[in-house]
Length: 260
Picture 1 (spheres, rainbow, N blue to C red):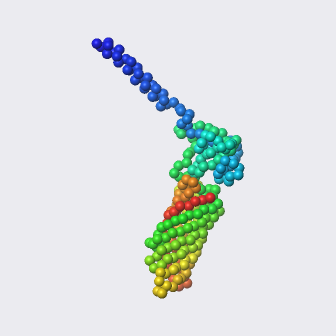
Picture 2: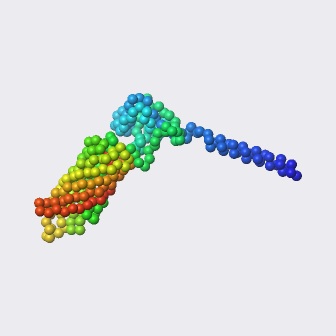
């Protein structure tokens, strides 16, 4: 009876053991299809373009050793479609790179685009930001352009609209912005600005339109996101004044900007 049960269980035991060995082998085996393919630059410098051809504009310049995740393994002519660190798609000439398969766990694996991205200010020339928030505890919106002189320095003309209980204020001027850590994905900045303010009352029979001057000082954070988009968080203190009076107000705004 015992021998019969032993002989009956023996094939089942062998099958279980073989299944366990196969499972362990598949878990530790390296599957080349699962490794990411990167295009590594093998020349001193190469241009990455917005499309597959030299007629498309250059959107990034790479140096020897830089690696970019390949989007598709097929080529468009002699061009490879790759992913930039900030999430944008670009094309690189196949003769200037070599394709390498690198596993995620490899110590030299290049980083992939994530929620944050390298700061767009490093090679930007200009930008535009749209923000909203509060000004003196009332609704406020502001648009500002940017002329980037260096990664840490920019001049930013701005225009804003504050909706007050008794009318509206149109604010305009220009500021100088200093980025304290332009190479960080989350970078603090400070700004100083000057300009004017035009006040339009709801009821002109009670109070006439009037003009003010203003000076502003502020600080905030620039958060670099994918596709060269920045989240801007900013606090500003305004001193508005005329020849015979002055006032002090604060604004808190947040918005998105794109740099190019």
